[in-house]
Amino acid sequence: MNSLGFLAAVNVVVWVGLFFYLWRLDRRISEREREG
Amino acid sequence: MKFAKLLLLPGMAAMVAAAFLWPSPAQGFLGESSRIVFFHVPCAWTASLAFLIAAGYSAAYLARGNPWHDEIAASAVRLGVLFATLALVTGSLFAKIMWGSYWNWDPRESSFLLLLFLYGAYLFLREAVDDPRRRARVAAAYALFAAVLMPFLVFVAPRVTASLHPQTVINPQGKILMDTPTRVVFFAGLAGFTAIFLWMLSLDARFARLTRRGRDARLGA
Image (cartoon, rainbow over the protein chains, first blue to last red):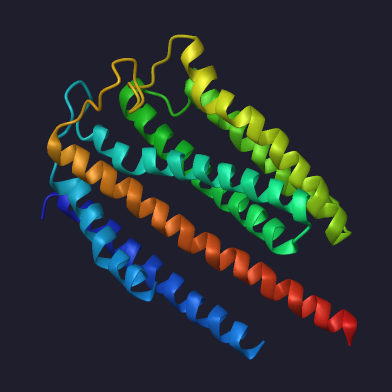
């Protein structure tokens, strides 16, 4: 894999990590809002 | 809404991968340095959008006194400062490659740094006032003052003197000087960063509202 491919892969992994972090946070906040 | 968020996962993954693999490097730039445009410009755009939203909700708070408006304004500034910092960091990386130094006191670098200080002061101001209503009023007035200076720092000051900064998307020719792959990835990046920012804004403001309600419930009990 060339260096651009490596950078692309690293950045996609970072994005996927951020997405699931935000998704989990969203779910937890929604639960707290439902609890009132 | 849930579907739109889910769509963001493959959409941004494709955009990020394409930023490195699809468009050819732009002419007149060293190596692959021009690819920073796909991350640097969306960060700067998102920061400007965040500060505009903060101004809008600050005006709404002063008009109606609804604490939810204050929470959105504060969240927008927090995220605006985050994205402005990312814009400065990515810009500095580009500067090191192209101009040999991370910081050159270029008009655009300096004006964006001032913008960061201007809104950093908003966050310090919020921490300095204990009473929530007074804090919201003072912060809203400051955000409106900062919003008057913001267009000057983003659009006017960097254009007054000669700058090392490459030509921006808003240029004297009034044309977007990009080939098709660059244009597609660039605008996908702008849309993606805007969507991520709006999602983060909603999370941060909703968390602030939950915290307020919890505090009010404790004080009322």
